[in-house]
Image (tube, rainbow, N blue to C red; front, side):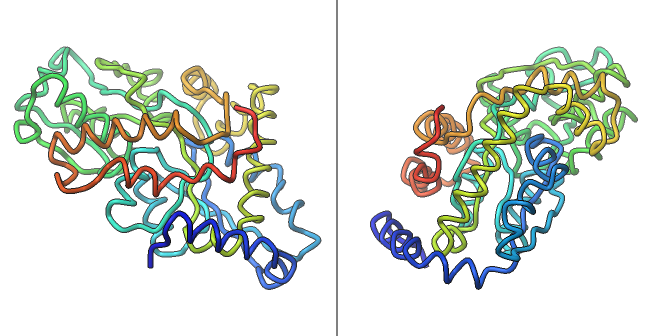
Length: 320
C-alpha cells in the first residue's frame, strides 16, 4: 500500500514518539556494501554502526551489492533495509513498483562512461551495428540509452549484451563485444591494466549515488534511518579528511591496485550527504530522457514519481 505524502509524515511522526519501544523490538539492521559506494566500506570496516547500536543489542549485517540492479532486488525482497544505487536506477525501481525511499546521498561520481578497445569505435555514432555489454537497470545502462538518444542512434540498431559489470569488462577485454557501458572501479581497471579507452564521457549524465531505504522500514523506524545517515555523514567527513584511507579500503574490498582505485576516487565527489531538489532534478531529467527513448512508458508521471521517491526529511538538518 502506498502512503500519501501527508500520511507518510503523520505515520513517521507517530512512530518517532514511540521510538524506545521500537528500538527494543528491532534486533537487526541489514545494509549493503558496494565498491561503487566507498562510504559503505569505511562504515563497515570501522564497525561504526555496530558501535552505535551496541547498547540496544541491535545486530548489523552487511550484504554485497554488485550493482544498482542487485541492490534494488535485495530491497524489493526485503533482504536489506538500506541499499546503494544510482539515482536514476532508483527511479526505475520505484516505477516498477519497488517500495523504496531515497533518503541520502553517498557521492556524486562520474562512475560511468562508454568504453572500448582498439579503433573500431571512436564515437557514439559508431555503435550502430555494434555490440555493447551493459548491466540492465543501472546507471551505465541509463547512460548508454541517453548517449544513443543524444546522438540519433536507435537502440534497436545496437546489440545489447546483458552482463553484470565485471563480466561486461571481461567481455570487452576478450573482444567478445565492441564496447561496454562501464562502471568504476572496474572501468578504471580496464583503463589502467587493459588499455581500454573511454570514448564517450558526460559527467552530468551520471546520476548521484543514492542511499535508499525500504519504505515500510523508514516509516516504522525514522530515528533509525536518521542514525544510519548520521554515520554516513561521519564517513563522508572521514573520506574528505583521509583520501588515502578511502583508497586503502577500496583496494582491500575490490582487490585492485591502488593506481586503479586512485583513478576512481579522482572521479568521485564526497561533497554532500544531503538529498533534495538538486538530486531530484538530475533524476527527473534522466527519467524524461528514458521516457523519450521509450524505456519508460509514456503514461508514467516521472516528476510525481521522483517526488514520491525522494524523502529529504532525513537529511534536512545536514549542511550541503
